[in-house]
Image (cartoon, rainbow, N blue to C red; front, side, top):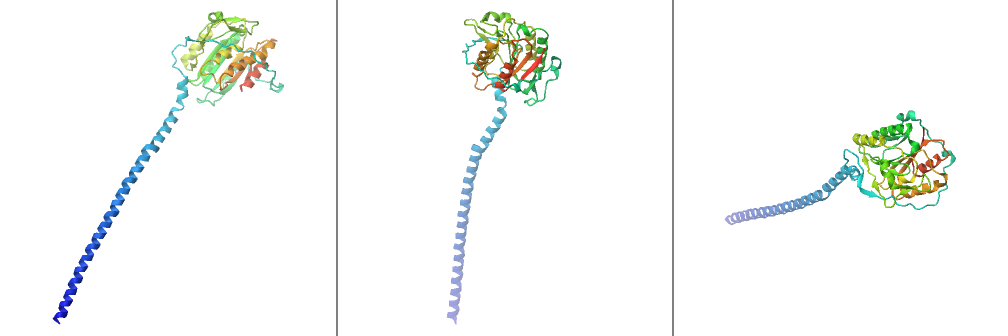
Length: 346
């Protein structure tokens, strides 16, 4: 009996000892497993965070910033590139001179506009003040000049006939309409004015100053520069109230230039500007010898084609009944360069 009790106690003690050892090793194994899992999670977390931080800072954020900078700066860059600082007074840049190149004779263009296109609007001088139309331009303004309303462009050239036949009351009306048109343009729009008859010159100059640079050829439509004479570079004028005042003051001091009407010269002069115009208003009473029409239009084409992007050309005819006035040529010119043709009665 004692032996049985002793064996029983031994077995109980042995089982208790084994039981304690098993729990110990299980506990150790569980703790090791927890430590391994925790270490793997922490390492993975650190690697993941580092990758996300690098991608976000190096790619997404920077790209977003660049796009924003472009959208803000892009509308401003063309204006800043092409609008030099203007002084309070507009003066010709005497230091920069240009020579008008000799234009070779080109084959005459015989195609004319169909008769169905002969009609055109003919505003009277008394109604010019109501011709300004609605917008479409960045500033909500259009370009109203003798009935032509077009979306505003950045660079607009006005080629104004100041020959002897254009003097008198019509010139006064023309200058009033021009002033109203200039003041209606959005501030910062750039304009150029070329005055012409036989020679071509700038508003800051007088015909008496430039006449000696030019010589007359075989007819009143055949003028060219003398020898190595050069012209002042045609400046772009940024629209502001002060600059318009200066332009109009210079125009009102001009004298008519009798003895010539050479259409080629104002186009040649205007297309030498840098940058070139993207819209041209060509105003004249239409005098041109019939036999020289093809040659004149070819020379104008040659001048315009020197610029990769051709400007639109609007032609304004000061209606006159004389036999050497050819409005159909102005219609043809306007059509070729996607412009408009308008007749204005004297």
